[in-house]
Image (cartoon, rainbow over all chains, first blue to last red; front, side):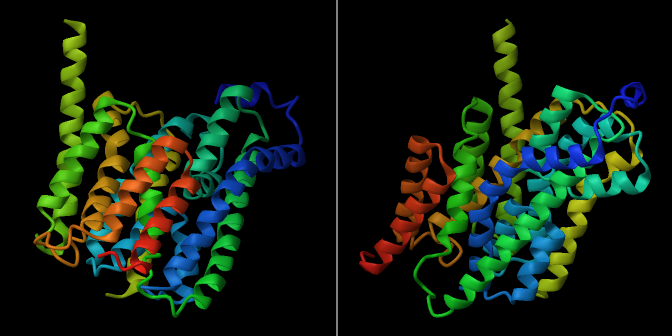
Amino acid sequence: MQAAADLGAAAPSRRTEILDGLKITLPFMVGAAPFGVIFGALATSQPLHLSPFETMALSLFVFSGSAQFVAIALMAVATPAWVIWLVTFILNLRHTLYAATLVGYVRHLSLGWRFILSAGLTDETFAAMEDRYRRLGVHRNSHWAYLASIIGMHVNWNCWTMIGIAVGMQMKGLDGLGLEFAAIATFIGMVVQKLRTAGAQTAAAVAGILAALLAALPYKAGLTIATLVAIAVAVIFERHLERRGQA
Amino acid sequence: MSVGIVILGMALINLVLRCPLFLVANHIRIPGIIEKALAHCPVAVLTAIIVPFALHLDQAPDGSQWLNPDLFATIAAVAASLLTRNLMATIAIGLGVAVSLRYLAVF
């Protein structure tokens, strides 16, 4: 990147960048805390009873809140592994968009750096860093702020997961209370906040109706079909609206 | 089903989604129609999980248990999300309804 060379001389120090990366990520870390606790508690308690080790492995290696909640919700209803993988894939396809947006700011870095900065990319770090790069541009040390944001989110998420596991181990006797609704409630909150456009409303309506109608299909095939059809219908409907708007 | 295999697969999928563009490090113009389709992915897949759960279609695919505490908890959570625009409030209210309707044994 051109700007990287231009700003090299006047670049802030690594230390400054690391501290600022943590500073702009802190609100997201606070926001993620309750979800880490809820995740750890739900995964280790009913109806799934994952071991603390398995639960920590999810937070350490998958490191994707929404995908982790989906995984425990689907594992609890005996979903085949490939369906969980497919849902993870569809749910996190948005990360390719994040990478496409940020790639111009990191292309001057070494392969190892680019691997770490992409492997640790989450919604939160994307939001923090995309805004920061737009405000401040890129210079010799700006990737240290990016790295600090990733490490902050990762350490934070895993600490709160651990606390959640401790809570979940105390809830072993609480089967059948309906606590698993917490995961579904997070999904509801995420969906409702996105229902502002006609396209999103179409996607939700088609996905919900089809998923209900096709629920009896084996291997949770209804979930996959409903998702793909809903995305297609929403895109076609949006194009239709655009054309009508232009006419 | 081995939980370890599921976790390993999920971790690899996330790497496959996050890393290739950075590793190639070329500017890629994502076509507008793909970008729009990607934007709808979370809403579509999450709604396709929520609705069968709310109607208890996993336990009863014929829909015979559609009237259940989780349906009312879902309605309450949607209302809470629309009114408060706050994720924690949505979870608290939805969870409260799901647990208290079971406790009261309404169904």
